[in-house]
Length: 416
Image 1: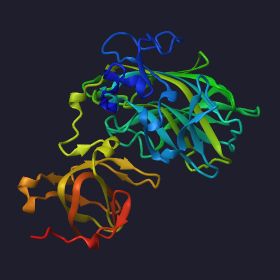
Image 2: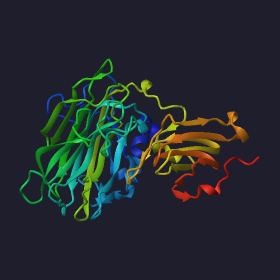
Image 3: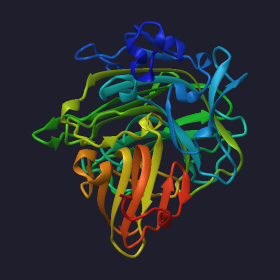
Image 4: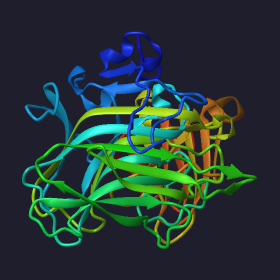
């Protein structure tokens, strides 16, 4: 059986899931050294065929927002018969993310990534004055932390980063034309949200355009981030944006985890009507794997994308006014995980959680001991069953695999 994790390492398996490992020398062929060099460890070029897959989740990690807003559609393709579509309903902000996740395909995080895709805004695309809509991730990292999105503050160099592209009505006078914008979370941004830069590259509604992006991580010297991170963007073969002074990381362990389609309308703004973004002919290539050996995740920490490998999900939410100490008893196995939701709530593995194996605990249960601040959330994946819950004070919310349950239904200790 070919799994997604081994997909690109097995001859013939990739094509069955709509991903073809090829021998393209460059993704971006314009703009001098914009393409990937052959130095270092170069990953195979990846051509994605939407028509060979039944669902976007077979190719991308689709998460946050409303994942079902990404779907394959016929009669809308640039080539072939199938395109990828993300819808944004009227008065809504969230589309979703459908990005290629390098670690899930058996790769370490590359330090440089080139991409190419055909993209089209829906024919009825319209935006209110000043609105922006992100539609593409040239590079993103969440494994290191959450400071690459959501207005969570300036990245410090070891807690996430991102560089995205958006469309906006700013700087355009013609009907059905929208400029590009670069939206980047980096160590030198001025505010809590990423830096937005207007790009003079008008994009027409209802027409396909070829987007090419290239990202190279900044170098690190003795734990200090050098100002040499690179982002380039081409539209229909023309270089429209270039910066070579970004600082994203102070550690070699943090590189490019995700790349590809990402849709979010506005910050607080909402879509004025039902909108859609279409994608086709997505190609990627990565190079220069990051030092994964330096990336410590702890013995009981799991990536959220591996959720389906566990029998259940568990979410703890504490009271808004006081710190909480709690203990969970699991008849089976449990790991800490990371997620965030559309309400702005986050759960991240942290040092205040200690998981003990069954042979060191009473009655054969695995225990989770934790201290949590007011109005915080902890997330877990587990096999087996939740046996007992002991919390001081009581928990504000307890969720099991998406269903809210009453913590009082569980004893404070396992029965003898």
